[in-house]
Picture 1 (spheres, helix red, strand yellow):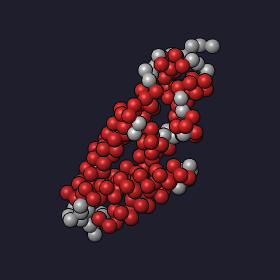
Picture 2 (cartoon, helix red, strand yellow):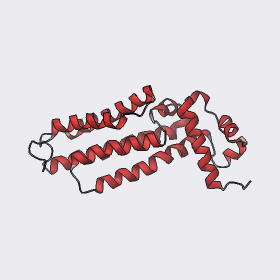
Picture 3 (cartoon, helix red, strand yellow):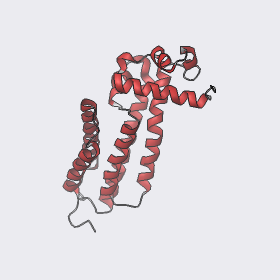
Picture 4 (spheres, helix red, strand yellow):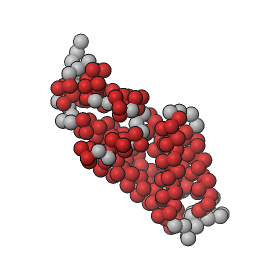
Length: 201
């Protein structure tokens, strides 16, 4: 049997860690458990990740790096702000669901003092989501697609809140059926509240 390359082994470690946390939570997550399920030693894992937190950071990067790239691309698209907001929901949930990586599960672990870098990573990603929403709402106001009196900060908070509510629903129900549709309908409802009448062409 051919020996796996360093990159392939690293990807396998991340995948097993993701599945373990998603299906069993953090209570069963240890480097020893991950190593056992792969069939390698703990030392082999530490050759790729210097600590348990470093492994979790690698796992989050597997989600957030392509997620950030997708949102950056969305901002550059020449489409209406309302369509960008709907697309943002789809992108966000797609990246979470397809990777079975729910960031809400990580916050209880991230508040531990020894996981300060994990907390920073999650906070940075939340900030990036907020900044992306803010930029889209501002675009809508400046393009006279949204009402000129639209409160950008308040609108951002509402939109991020409805996205997080959908993720919490996923966390509790563990079902993805209708998840994107639910979030999209919430987004459409909110956009109707701030949309300038007659702005659609």
